[in-house]
Image (cartoon, rainbow, N blue to C red; front, side, top):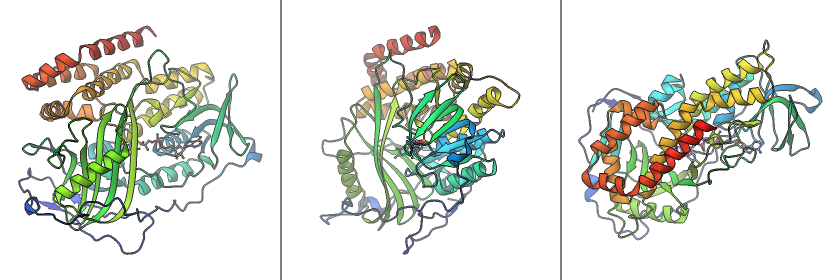
Length: 490
Ligand SMILES: Cc1cc2nc3c(=O)[nH]c(=O)nc-3n(C[C@H](O)[C@H](O)[C@H](O)COP(=O)(O)OP(=O)(O)OC[C@H]3O[C@@H](n4cnc5c(N)ncnc54)[C@H](O)[C@@H]3O)c2cc1C
């Protein structure tokens, strides 16, 4: 294996955020080794049970001199962005590139985002953001079951949250974005102006308001002809110092569906493990329920993770960071258009079948920014309803809305499959041509591609899977077609 990986030990002192070395990988041949670990015998009673360990690191906020908005300024902004998460900051940076007056409001605009983000390397490279990955793995592995493992020749990376946020905030500061430290409480709309009322009583005035406040957003309205029937991805993850682990350092584990550690628990609402090995004793491990409805409990997810780690012989010595994920997936799109623009997790861009959103949001920001500039840029006089319609349509053109119906159909199908059917599904999915497989995972397929992919998936599926899909999915198919018709007549 011709791969260079810088190994390192976890620091003894507490860093502001756990530092990971930059790694460089050459292309590699596909793997062969399974480790000596597999035969290990574990007889310690607490082996694998790390739940009593507390996360040791709280990342320190960025140390930056932010240009703040002063209420005495009475500025009327072109755009007010609520939220300094990945979506809000990226959009602020992109819109301000056009010289527009932008204000970003968040109670803690410099805090480090709490989630651990993984992305496909090619997606970030295409955006020129590859420097914001702190570790890459040239190969992606998927354990379908104890006998079958698939290897994808697609590089995966972990986002260096501090670096990405620092880069985006620097861009914002350079382009003149103002920040305001407060929580947005209410939005009032007038014909050509909106007012964001903050929890300290200050009003921010702007021509356009973008809500990038995440899944909990309260300013966005959703289509009322559809029930808000989200699927939920639930995860519990730890960046852990371990005695040892059985995973190769040049492979990220996208999904480990092996479940011989579960006597009976995994057939229904099955969970898998996602793992990013950084060194022989530092690894990010996350037990994940891909999609469930109602949501599987975090307690259940943690219990399964303890059993899995015990089975794999992974003894957690320290928990450096932890995260508890709840990602609503699928469900209705926001009502299009409406006076406030949604951006990020609240805008329907979370991939309904995978829960990913980061790269798509980074990609969409320049498109939405260009549309905002076309309407509000200095030589234009487009304001009010026409701006809302144009900007919403730049984010959700009809083709994307229809594609999303297909992706949501994918999620609904996954919800209906039992563990064996799920395995068969992924067995077939990861045999697709890379263009289709990667395009599906990155939400970049055209409608034609999606139709081809669906047929190809069916053709690749085993007879029992075809039977399961044919038996379980006609109703879902009818619903999807109904939703597509509604998109056309809106
Ligand atoms: C645990 C977890 C792991 C994830 N991992 C991945 C991954 O690996 N890859 C991937 O692509 N996606 C991942 N996602 C999905 C998605 O990328 C994240 O949820 C992402 O953080 C969403 O970004 P956002 O900017 O839309 O919202 P958030 O990150 O939630 O940011 C919202 C911001 O708005 C601020 N805010 C909230 N309310 C207000 C208010 N009223 N006024 C002012 N400010 C406000 C908050 O302080 C916060 O700063 C993950 C999600 C979770 C929960």
